[in-house]
Length: 451
Ligand code: FDA
Ligand code: NAP
Image (cartoon, rainbow, N blue to C red; front, top):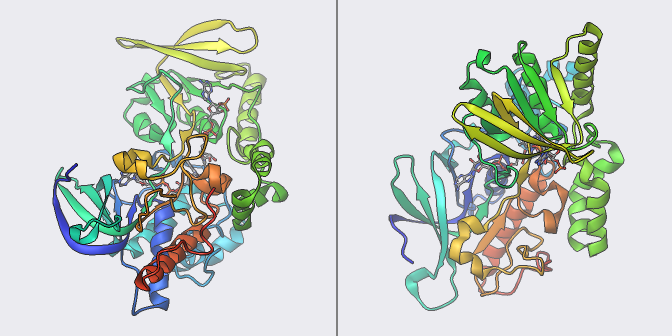
């Protein structure tokens, strides 16, 4: 299969696909490696399809706060002396003293976004925005018959033209994939939470008299609160599959599941140990809500009862089974889990805050994916250093930042461990490059044992 577009001459040590927080953190780790080894830096470039840096912009709701401490920033757990820390950002913004006075470990998402943009600006020469990677394929340098040792990465620029860049490794960090319930599609009046603010902004508030939010996770609760604030004339309904919102467990012992050391416990643990992580600690992240948001929603509901006029409704033990759209009308099919009764109701907007699927590298790898091993459950096998296990002697590496919950545990899709993970990936790339240059081919000692 041929690839269109002209190939640039340079062969990068690593090309990053996506420039969200994970690959931003990797770019910094690589830069800091270069500062400590200036004669042999790791060459890298990153491609990001958004026109500028943005981190879940459509969920930057006014009062949303971070779900991790500010110290779990892009760098601190790997290198507390880094100039890219959140504390450095505060210092550069003349807000360090006030931040400390504020005594809050959890900044707003708005402020954290400012931090990420500030850090991304420092790496501006390393990233091309408005560029989408569309495929990756292996080639052998010089066209000989040996095992592929190079990756060609096809990049589509904003104007639709394509070009090809070459690298020894790629770091795929394309993020979570929005999930709608089976058989349901988004449109003008049916939105996923990941596109919320853009969709909401495109509608006149007076046209939104009856809105419904589906789900019992953090996104659903934040959007329900936002709609209740922003649409004082509207009926706001929350469709909750559980009996009520459940609290996100961020107490200290449970929070240890996000410690950098938990990755080894998960990766090298028995199947039973891994199951225990999920059985006991899924409620640190999925289908759960921060306590302050739960309280705020309950207080609103109670206030409405006190005043005898209710427009905030919670439909508990209920799931959405379907959506019917005809002309200007959208009807939602609701199924009560209590008695299996089914009801239809008309809405002006329906927001599916129904979560995300993990990153799937096969979408980008296409045919090339056949080179990588899968486990009995059909999931990619991944080495401890986040490199896909290949079955065909490739010396070039495909690293994952995300999509490794089955091998590396709960922090895989989160920010908690990105500083350390990026450092581990940078170390692996350097180590494997050294091995290659020394002419050895065996697996790197620490990074071997594949799950
Ligand atoms: P992210 O999704 O941020 O970045 C991926 C990037 O790749 C995107 O910018 C995308 O445009 C780009 N891209 C995709 N395909 C591409 C292609 N083919 N070519 C080029 N570019 C491509 N976690 C946490 O620990 N604490 C928190 O407070 C939060 N808060 C939070 C809020 C909301 C609303 C959501 C939905 C999620 C969170 N999370 C979170 C979890 C979240 O996954 C995490 O914060 C980061 O977004 C993970 O960063 P990544 O860089 O891995 O993915
Ligand atoms: P989520 O936690 O996966 O929650 C999805 C919810 O949708 C679940 O309650 C699920 O119920 C429900 N659901 C799915 N299909 C349904 C149906 N047909 N009918 C009714 N309900 C249905 O997703 P999320 O809230 O988007 O959170 C994803 C990640 O983003 C988490 O890491 C979260 O912490 C993060 N986040 C962070 C912030 C912040 O930092 N402030 C804000 C938003 C999100 P079941 O469990 O029964 O399937």
